[in-house]
Image 1 (tube, chains in turn red, cyan):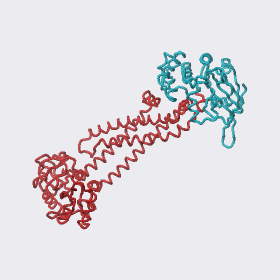
Image 2 (image 1 turned 30 degrees about the vertical axis):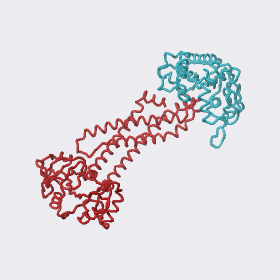
Image 3 (image 1 turned 45 degrees about the vertical axis):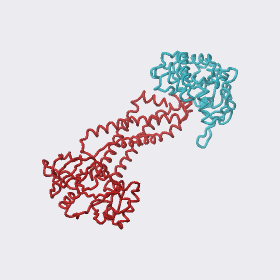
Length: 371
Length: 236
């Protein structure tokens, strides 16, 4: 083991190629992961921000706001269920917004949310015609006091404050009172108008000690099957595109990990071939295969640690270099840790390909072989 | 050294190596190849034996069996009073750590370790003794005239110095027997003679037995005895 460490220290250049390639793979893993996290964050912020345990859609909505309608009668039945602490209506309209000073086609992508129960970080519903905008909308030139003209009907909403991480479908959220949302929806989406008191969905807070999953079943029973109630996590995962994005990205990440395994496997197999004679001598003077293989694994792990550190530094630099909002990229410590852990695992797996070769080296070959 | 496991090995009265009717047969495809045929050899406690024979004669096999690298097909092998004929590969590995020293012809020293570290490899591979091992390494380097070169890498040493480091490594575990595989083949006559003289001095002064494999007849007079081997048959 100490021999392996000394080799790393004395001959770092031998390991430079593998370190460089693994560092680039680490950057790729972190970039892909960060992109996925960013996309998911921007798609799901509005739901994740909900201070609620359950989300209620109509049973025919296939877990989408846009296909869902909850009538006041259904809402009353939900409120009457035992274990329901609070119920708030929720509706959203995805529309373009005209910002004063921007060009006529330079629309801000808006997700106008009408709400009753304040999500985390969002205040109580503002006055009619007013709204809290998500931070990302600052990039569109929106400030406190800006009057945004929403949709083709140019319904005015004045921004009175900002909130963070509440986006939906990659669009900047604008949080307004329920009636403001209805007027925006009905003026701009005549194909999908909502009546008084009607919402697209409900968010439900469970009373203390009540299991949300059980309560979800009770709610759906109480409405006679007119609703489909999901826990908040289920609702986030059910948002259109989220699972698909995750599966596509995870497949690419998986292929990248396979590449990492192959790189480690090839590199250390080559090193092992190069060291056949040396390992023969060491075995002859009493080295066990286990000791020699442990040296290979130690080197691979250290190379991976160094490569991961370089990769992480590059990914952080990339994160800082890319202008905010240009791409949905977010680098979280948990993503970094997970990627490094996966790379370390890949390097051990890659080494395993050299195990047979190390085992097969015959100490007898050390004797009688000319230089 | 006061290591109890090696105390008996320096007793010149006890043979350091006993080979009795040793046979080694390799299977090559469908036929058997006899590499060593009923070899019998006894090496005294401080004797230097030159093993001479053309390539393919079986001297490598004999050396490997005497050094506990290979197990014999038949026969009895006793090294330093320890019978190793039926040892498992794992037992042989431990035996090699404790009882024998090797000086190889080919890749010998670890190229990225200093002379001193190359000696300490022996300690790192076996039971770690730490400080006593470091003391022994320093003592051996001094006795071999290498104190000034202790921190040099093999690449910075001359051929003769490298051989001396290799001899020092072979002596680290205070072996009962040291096996030299063609120690002079890569050296010119003058350096070869110097190395043989060194082997003679170092082995005799320590009372350690040695088998020196060579096909260089010029070097055999440094040995106490010459054993010739041809087609797997030994003529001592």
